[in-house]
Amino acid sequence: MAKVKRTSKSETIRTYLRTHSNGSPAKVVAELKAQGVEVSRSHVSVIKSKLKGAGSRRGDSRRAGLNGGVRVMKGHQRPQHRSIAALEGRYRKALEARRAELHEQIAELDRKLEYLG
Image 1 (cartoon, rainbow, N blue to C red):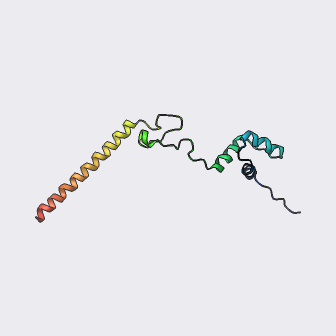
Image 2: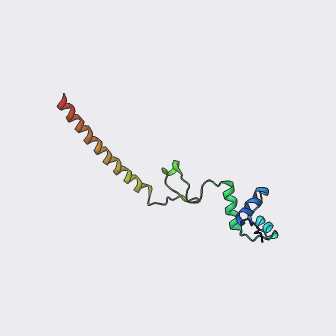
Image 3: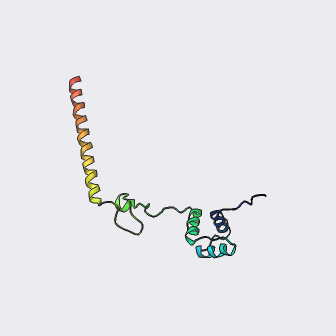
């Protein structure tokens, strides 16, 4: 007996959305239910967003101009980490350490120039 090739629910949703691109998830669920395919609205929403190529997902937005590229949850103004002041303190310490290294290198080069000169 030959096997009947069945399409997955996801593929059925994609096929339907390609022909009816403006359908809401509830409408898609109702139409597919009439065809004998049981799917949930959330499943339809996920497939629909993947077909659109949804850009940013929740929690991935960055507001570089407002807070220096600190990760911010959509709809919230507060950064996910402790505070911007804490970041500034860490950056300041790192810059001061780098500055001290550079001063040491310059002093070493001056000693070598004096030796050669």
